[in-house]
Image (tube, rainbow, N blue to C red; front, side):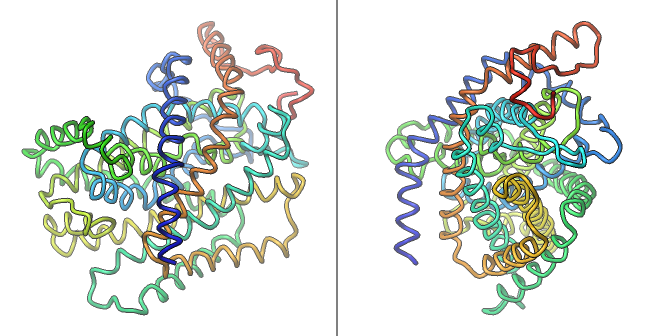
Length: 470
C-alpha cells in the first residue's frame, strides 16, 4: 500500500498537477475572466438577486441547488484541506487558493451555464443534466460523456466520500476515548446514517442540505470572525507572511511538488471544485428562465467557499500563533490552534464542524452520483433494486474510508479529481463561446428592463439539438 501511495503521489505532483492542471486551470480561469469581462466581479450583485428566484411549483430552486453544491464544497477540505496546504506548502498556499477561487468563479459560471443550456426534461417535466450531457449534445461525443460519468462516480462516490469519512473520524483523535477501534466505530455509525439519508432519495438530500448548510457555514464563519478579532493584532503579520511566501519563486521552482503554489492549486481546486464538472449536475436540475441565472448562482458558491470558509479557516488558525509544521498537517493543526484559544471547547467546536461538514459533503457528493447513474442508464432512473444495492455500497465506502491511511485517501482523491478536470475543462473551452453569447443576451435583456428569457436561436444554436429549451 505504501508503494502505491507513493506512486500515485509522484504522478499527481510531477505530471498531473504540474504542469498539466496548473496550466489548464489557471489558463482557463484567466481566459474566461477576460472574455466575460470579469463576470465574477461585474455581476456579483446580480448573482445575489437571482439566487432568491423561485421556480414553478415542485421545481428545484436555485437556492437548493446552491446549497447542494456548497454542501458538497463546504466540506472537510475547507478545514482539513486548508490546514494541510498551510502545513505542507507554507502560508503562501492561502494566496494561491484565493487566485484559484477568483479565476475559478469565471470557470464555474461557464460550466454551469452550459449545463443549463444542454439540460433535458424527464417524463414528469422536471429538468436534469450535467457535463455528460453537454459533452454528448454539445460536442457530439456520447463516449466522452460516459467516460466522464464513470470518472465522476469514482471521484465523488468513492474517493471524496472515503476522504470525507477519514477526515471526520480523525478529528476525534484528540480525545481520551479514541483508540484503535475508534475509526471502525465512527465509520460504522456515519455509514449507517448515510444509508438512512440515501434511502430517502434526492428529495431528502435536497431537504437536508437546504436546512443545514446555511446554519453550518454561517456558524463556522461567525466563530472564526470572533477569534480573528480577538487576535486582530496579528493580522497584518499574517498577510505579510502569506504574500511573502506566495511570491517566493526561488522556493516554488526549486521544488514545486511541495511548494505553496502546488498546494494552493490542489487544495483550492478541492475546496471550490471550479472546472471539475461537479456543480453542473445540481445546476441542471433548476427550473429557470435563462441559463445565465444559474451560472451566476454557482459563481457565487465559489466565492462562498474560497473567500468565506477557506479564508476563515486560514486566518483563524494562523492568528492563533501556533506554528504550522508538517507534523500537524490535517485536523491536528486546526485543533491545536483552536485549543490554544478556546481550550477543550476549541476541540469540540472543530469536531462538531467536521461532523456536519463531512456529512453534507457525503450527501451532496451522492446527489451528483445519482445524476450520472441516470446518464449511464440511458437517461432513465435505475431500478429500485439497483439503487438500493448502490446505496448500501456507498454507505460501506463511508465506513471503509474512516479506516484508511491519510496519504492514500488524499492521493487517490487528487488523482480522480484531476482526471475529471482534464476531461471537463477542454470541453468547456470548446463550448465556452455559447455561454459567453448567453451572457451577452442576458445583459442585453436586462438593459431593456426585462426579466431575461432564453431562446436558443438568439445565440445561434439549433433548437432541435436541445431538449428543455425547445
